[in-house]
Length: 467
Image (cartoon, rainbow, N blue to C red; front, side, top):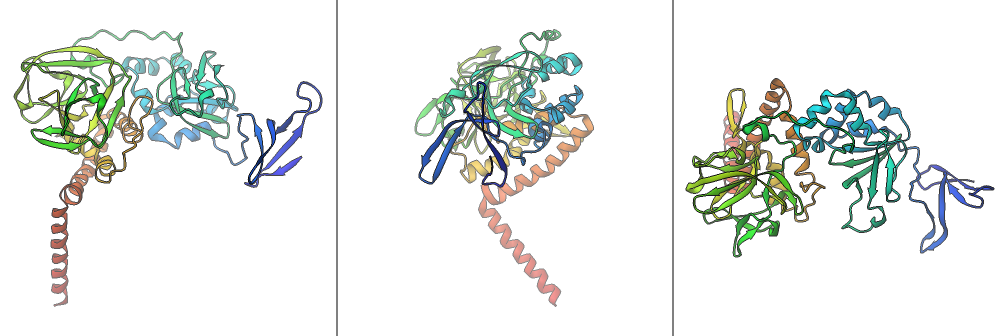
């Protein structure tokens, strides 16, 4: 029996005769598990978890990935290098667990270099993400990949529980899309086959060897404290969006977002800085701290005897691991005071330096990052639209944290000429952002006066033209 669906597509209803399926009813080869369930406006026939796909579901896995270059360009480039694009485009049926750009940015640099240099290892890792069937995650269990490895699916039995994530090998699946030749499950961590032997990184010493972003986290530990207005010193782990925290002296500003909020996360990419005043702070090596001349430097570059802002002198610095969560609150000025007297930035350094050189001109990482944050600041601070902020599997703010981080990580990976062109464009845009913010948001009176003066000038010029 063929019937027309509401959207116009034709579906086939069939009752099987004979064999183990004798008497069972199927709709486009999907079994009806419960029939004739009466509802207030019709009848429901329950089917097994696999969806019925209309002909309008088109495109390929590669089409799906290339439609979101800010999310999957790295994966597409590596698949092309490994010669897998044609398979992912034309093979059917296939399921891909697709790591986004941030997933590759999180890999240690020597691991990513190894995959780029060793074609067999690259193919092994990529095919470990592919299952040779349409995998709709109907039930928990183990599935076999094209690489012949196994992936463990969990969380399907708690689909209605918001506190339980759908996961593959313990990695959260944050979005699923159906395409013409299969299924794409989006993830934010690269799955590494357990039998893949990755060479140890070459030994080296000095700041540049262990500072790179890959594998690092960009925030403070949960035990770090800030001064909350009318409340006093409060742990980062207890902060909420909207809390007013000290940013300098007696000035307080609201937290409008968390770039990173991961209560159960751990990291070995931290340093502990102790001061002669007896205070100390645990912070990721990339995070920017203010020093005596008003500049910002990466925490990983600070040494004993350095003088920080607020006349704070560093007594000792050592590498540490933390296990009490990772937090990075954002304030409108892009700074706040931690642990009593240490002035910290909301931002990080990507290139092991306090400045970015563009065409022979230096721009501070603080200015670049604060300007880059302008759209986020407008929506979340000035318009107050981020009260219910969500975070991805790594604790990064969804949309405002993970995508910009993936984008800027790619920019720093470009060649010299391409990077200069991108940064030159960004600086022009950032300058416009600063003018707009100062004129219309931070100091609206200035904008009003400027608008009146502009209108007066236009009227004056118009009168001159008439005369």
